[in-house]
Length: 474
Picture 1 (cartoon, rainbow, N blue to C red):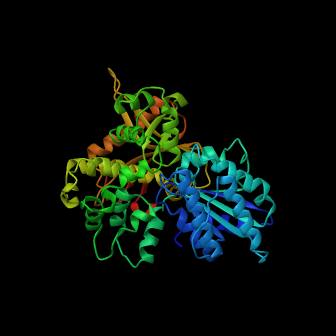
Picture 2: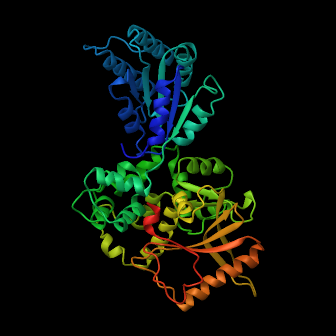
Picture 3: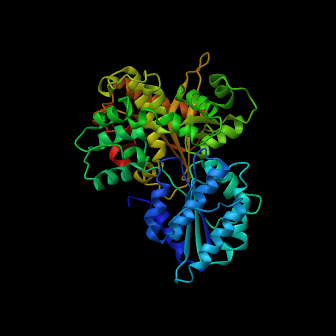
């Protein structure tokens, strides 16, 4: 298995512990939750239930019966179904008792839990009864999964009813990093240069199921064409499926995502409302929280600002790519990424997308800077110009607890960067203006993050303190 070592260790400890375990596996759609659980437990799963998307309560109960019958390896017609979830979990309890003691923990896996535990289903009542009256006294591991991250946090992890504080371990499954993406393709005997890997990561992110669509023997551009721009490409229509599978009234979530896609610096709450056409109140705070918990957006407080000044930024790579290049394509019309990647629109998008990747790999950046063990906070810095005061925008500030601040300039290029006299003056001005505006007494390091580094010349010497290249993100 690629990566996932921390997650596998959590599962191992749950199996080896001397107490019953209830594990919540949380992560966005297509990130590999089911694969992780099935790969680790294999044929030791004693009962597995997969929720039905948009299934009625009756259909979910019938599905439970089919799953129980499969676990029992019983053939023939089904004579009756549970009357409710209390009855269903009582049947599950009787089945587990019939297995006897085999010297290992029993394993129950319930996948896509939010699809089963709808508001009027009473599923959580039955599940709470099962855990509190039976499973909590058994040699058992119960694993529950859900792609609706916000729902899982609210209804399971932070449950205030019968499941309060019952979750013993949590796994929050993240997309692959760049290095894990590289290892994944190597495991499939697919070879790309790191620049090509970066191109695909900017379009797809590190979502394993998206990366699974990539084929060997093709360049990154060909694969992006096939998956994103061909009328039958998998990622051509994934966007609407993505949000509708996770949220009720997905159009409200998509409106906020669309608003954030239009701003590179991020938007505050008021600007989000103005750009999305949504009205204040009506659960906007909840929507923003759910989008952030699900990994689609990131909030941050600008340097030396207060929490009320928080900005929200779209950080889901695929959503950003889709809204910029795929959304407005007619359904049956293909496009060509080779030609699109030569446009000015692509250049502005690629700069923002590369910034996102740097933010997603801040640990790798800190390691290169030699400050992995130093506590840091990450910010952007943006100030409008006024009469007599020039404006200032800094891509990334790393505020370090070792009495220093790294001012990071992020540039996405397809070759080495050459520091011209004009650019050197601009970078020097950024550092001076930041020191003036922030009044900081910390030491300022000017750091350049780019794909292939810089070609040293008289303008870079004594100006750039550290250079981070694409390879350092892997």
